[in-house]
Image (cartoon, rainbow, N blue to C red):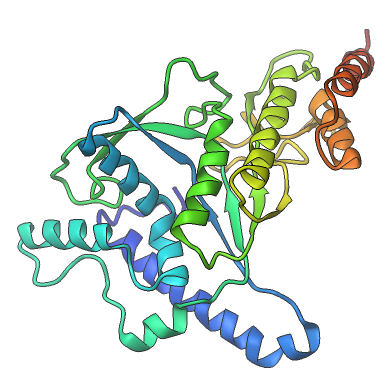
Length: 314
């Protein structure tokens, strides 16, 4: 993970603390100097997947709650509720004492900092991709990823992707959105800024008919719609990740999230079936009737087949 520094259970919390203070300063600067004339909004974008309890035991339900608090609560709670989530304060504080430290590895906010950070987001940007099965597991070593005392895995029934960290579970995004609404009543609205699925790079001629990604967007956007209509979540936007195959962090060009194929030698860009589906989805402002959807899928199959022939020269 960037920037590649191993600071155990100190650096992650310290950087989160500094980031929140910097975010608040930018928010207030904009509100004070520019908002009166520009009338813009300032939000924060956070990454969060859904944590499914391993079973219905209180121990594992609590573990799933900790999963969510370490994932998004560390950043959202100071903005929408005030201060760190209590479970993070308690866990890190207890472990710090057992390590013989005179103070917690989690930095303490001053009252002025709490006041400065509180309410500094006009909307919540959300990046969400997958879900995890979460269980309780006591961990002794100090660390940002061990202090929560959880273990995570995927349900074997969830389809895999081209990334080891991403399994496909469409109901998860609805559950994340509903959890945000319940946990942070003042969230205002949610802008989904990233949601997508990867495939590994293919040797030889690339298959543009990415039906698995078409299904991903169909099922995930359907669950976003359920969150809006059935759960009352105020979602005001959705953006697929990503428009193009690109450089994916430490995995470079080996994992492709794009709805357009990129030849990294020539930079030629060719739409995949998912681009054709997403185009229709946006034009229609949602999923149509089953009959129209069936027609879309038939049309897309023919279109991506022709693109495949052109790409491969067959």
